[in-house]
Image (cartoon, rainbow, N blue to C red; front, side, top):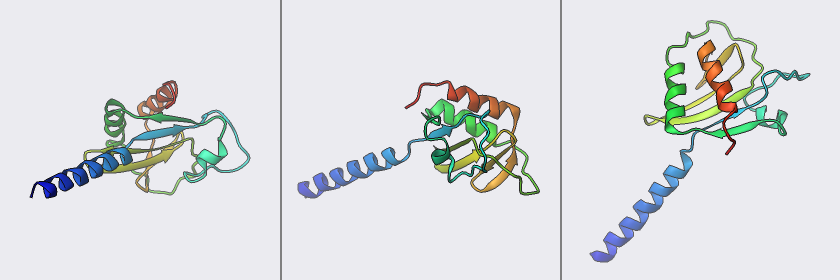
Length: 132
């Protein structure tokens, strides 16, 4: 019986470690003022800005702030043209939130919203944070 408890503890510890490791929240931020001759999508952002993109690991305060700024955004009724400059993943409140956008729009889990000035400014301040 004691051996089974030890095995169970080892399995639980391993799962906890793997789950915690997989739930790092981050944001990639590319230069907002750079013009490129082609459209940047969520999928090719990191390839398009290999030398200048910055990856910032988000702490709980950052995650909660971004979440609080995303919640009140107004959903767009038409599909916008986007020139993506940031993308991120947040694990918060048992949710996985994937977002990407530019200075005008933001896509959150596949739904397009109008970008707020406050959220854009917050993302720009994150770029000044030391890279991880």
